[in-house]
Image (tube, rainbow, N blue to C red; front, side, top):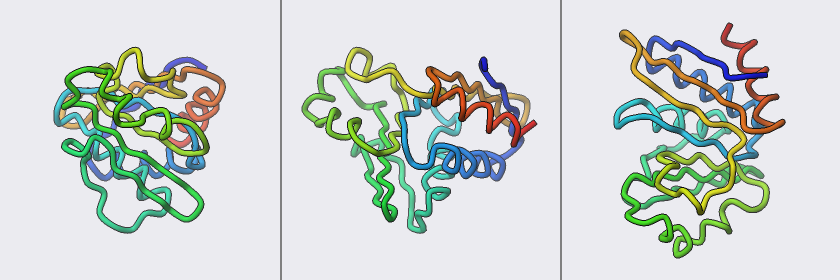
Length: 156
């Protein structure tokens, strides 16, 4: 399976995709979210976290760098590395503890953590497209390939 491109017209469809991503990942893996400010990375993350069963607020971790979510047996971590000055700061944050084990890690602005982040299962790049968004889903391994195949069927 190669890259999958999806065109989503509105926020509701972005949330729906997030719910589908939550289902196919089953709360495990690493997803990089790439795109300019306001592209919809946090909206997609909100859909994923709510799709895992979280019922409270899902806030952007712009100032905290990471927001943890314990949802039953599922652990999810939403990172926003936009304010990271140096990738080495991730060591002080204890990034390895978050990335090891059974959890889903959503990482916005992954390029700011270059050299300290592992290879993701999936990279999602979000770009403006007419009045909606274009999303490129690029699998980075077998797990990502399975996810993309399932998502392509759901959103064809």
